[in-house]
Image (tube, rainbow, N blue to C red; front, side):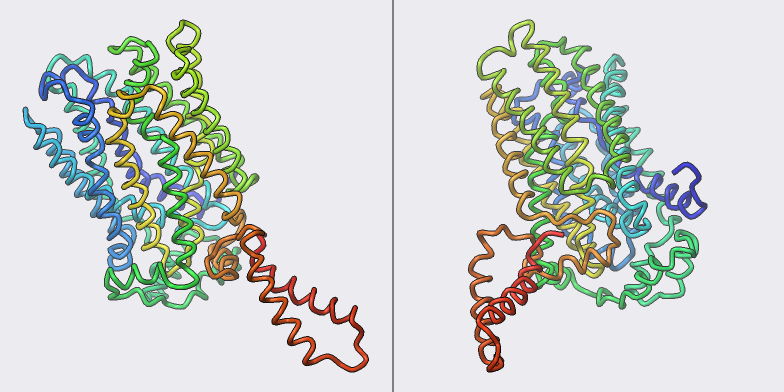
Amino acid sequence: MHRPSKYAVRVFLSTCFASLAAGLFGIGAITEMSTFEDEFGVLSPFIRGLTVSVILLPSALSGMLAGNVSDKISRKKSISLGAAIFAAGSALSAGAKGSLVMLIVARCIAGTGEGLFLGCLGVYLTEISPRHMRSHMLLINQLMTSGAIAAGFFICYGSANIPNSMGWRFPFILQTITATILAVGAPFLPYSARWLISQGRRDEALAVLDRLVDPKDIEERRELLAIPPAAVRNRSQIAALKDIWAPGVRGRTTLGAILQVFQQLSGIDFVLFYAPLLFQQAGLDPSTSSFIASGCTGLVLVACVFAGTFYIEKVGRRKIWMVGGTGTSVCLFTLGFLYATGAAHTPVGKYAAIIFIELFAVCFTSSWSLITKLYAAEIQPMRTRAAATSTGQAVNQAVNFVVAISGPAFLARSSSGPYFFYGGCTALGVIFAMFFMHEVRGKSLESIDTTFEGSALATSWPKVFQTARLTEARLRKNSRSQSTNLPGETRAEIREHIQMETIGENSVFEEE
């Protein structure tokens, strides 16, 4: 990190530009602006939730197609296409005049593009990054997302003081400019060498490797070039979806999707989308202080993601998920308790609620935010990585839609209910990881593939679920041992023989 090679610099620059896609967020506070209300009227809790979250539903649907699109036209061109569609939707959003329907339709168009580039971005960054840089490059992407959220709150705070409709249009205009830059520039990024290999374009893959991977890293180059061309050319979307549910892969797909669901059920986007509303609920001034506090929350997210670069490869994905999830759950339960008892409405309790909202953001961003998408992409083999990752992203966006659209109404009915609900879901996510997450820290993508080949469902089963399989294995081994037993072999030697073979068979269930 102190003296990066020219290869690392190229990967870093490519990652930074591609991660502009992650900067196309952070405008949830627009609905809290007085100029927005002047244009569209005061929105009910449900309509406010719909306006904010409607972008997520088409994003989920197009995200299902993103893997197949990126397999056909490449990762970088899919990012470019998605950014172009998003730019068109943002431009229409900025031009909406007095018609909430036009704004919602424009948001749907933007969401279609969002699903495409989000479904491909994680795969692209995973595949162009050498093993020792992979997690750090994904963190840059997350850093851009967190930075955009922070910048979005401050931009909305600044533009809220513009006395005319330009106040709420300005953030959409910035989004349009950013998305256009990405759409124009993404085709000039390097191809994913793994995608080129899958298309049978070996010479081009070698040229990309010469630019992005140090020639001294023989092992990385050998593993990559040993990948047989996957049968992804001219595959239909149905065929691609069948592949991710094939034996040996469906467990990984399920695992990645469930982790994405738990990530959203932690309530993070409930907090980020409606941060000004939550800080108003805690007693801050709705016109200024809530926007500033929301922006400070965004800055906390940036700091936590940056700090994650120093420990993610040292600690490991599984431990980070479990420890961070536990802290996140405790913060949510505490917030629920403060509002359920009425303590949050006292002078001291008000500040306690604000502190625990910030602690929640710290715990989540330092853990689940860092590793969920990274882990879901890492555990997939080459031929299914794009389709499975885009499917997981679609699941993520679908759950996110439900969380976002229900947020204002949920909060209006119960000030404590959302915190208890999301806290319980987060606790379940920790328990799930305890049983089913393999650790993949420091492994190449190809060796990770080998790690998951040992189990039919590609998960680390808890002991209680292994009993039936192990009993069957012992009976089979016992029968085999008796049939091949030499006359002079003792009963103790037979038991030792069975034990050694059973341990060998059981090892596929154990976590490394």
